[in-house]
Length: 225
Image 1 (tube, helix red, strand yellow):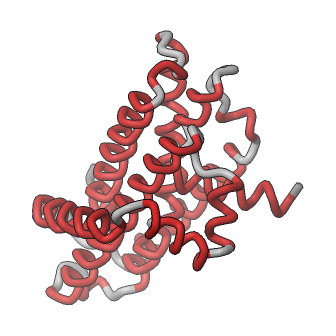
Image 2 (image 1 turned 30 degrees about the horizontal axis):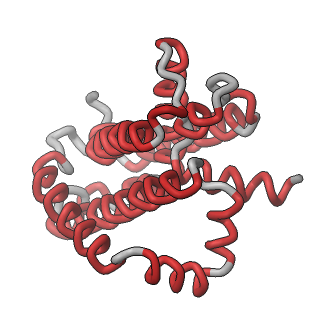
């Protein structure tokens, strides 16, 4: 854990994993009777969820990784960097919390991770917003997410920065290139649908798909079918 980049990304990743598996528990309990609770299917579900969550995380963090590479070393850990990083973390937390709440509501209604229906919502955002506002107390959801975001950011504020020496531009470039390679490797390893199948149980297979991954996987599939 002496890598500057890993230490900077760690709070984002830990928050993501805790939230993803917490969401999994809620979704599994919502449709308890549809889930295969045998040992191996559950282990596979958890493992594949961890994989799809990791892939989504890699892509979502690309802007921050590029930021850590491009800014001068002397700027890192300054007040300006702390404002940008804390603000970025707050946006990330709020966005991921919103996505998880949406995943739970979508799961409760359709018994599925984000699919073609969710993509249709994005293609008709005005109609989607009108329907959501009509069906849910959206203002209370947003307020609750905001309160949770403030609590998370406040709790993690001391862990967003570290005492690991800031590497030079070339070392940060190498780390960025390795990170990009991980993104490409992750993409080519899971674009095959069979790689993320738990078993023949529909509920377990859907639980194993992280929300953002499932959404963009559906978009990709629609464009290439």
